[in-house]
Image (cartoon, rainbow, N blue to C red):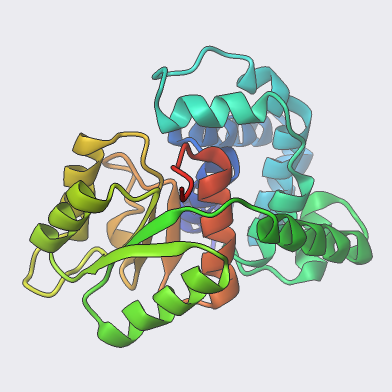
Length: 266
């Protein structure tokens, strides 16, 4: 496989990671573009990408580590939106612990691979992940809407959400139900599948909800990530693949609330 093919096969997932790390599709894609431009300008860096996914994420990490504050200082693309909140948070944080958590959960790297990506000792990465988990435990609670047509998965997500100290404001198996629950309960976070019980779309359900409140952080949990990682339309900032591990959903919820403007429980 050529370097180009190697990078192309991993690029959708690097873009997913960049969005989750920055809380913004625009900012995430800017870092991915900067990474590819750096590789084109540096033969040694370009050659390193032959070794696969770890090398690509390592190259991205170098760009991110050296430049994220500069990007964060740019004006927000849409004041009052989730992206504006993400830019505000980026101005005041150094999210190494969250980076380590996302690499080992959402991206499913081993601690050793994450250490190579972040240019750290494995023990440092393990410590950062633990720090991030402890930070999650201190997060304020919010109300969560679950849009999922499989009852067992819906119950699993309910248990997980409650174990993190959040409240379930409702569940829905169809677009119509989701819109009704969201209008009545005004959740602070949405977990959504994309293929629902009556053939309706979770994407359309989320569009309905965001039309009511465009501040709403949303996490898509789907067995069909390739439908959302096409680059042809706005892609979700937070995307978890089924079958999922609870630690992956936990990390995505934490990151969405970290950047989001979700409403706390009264």
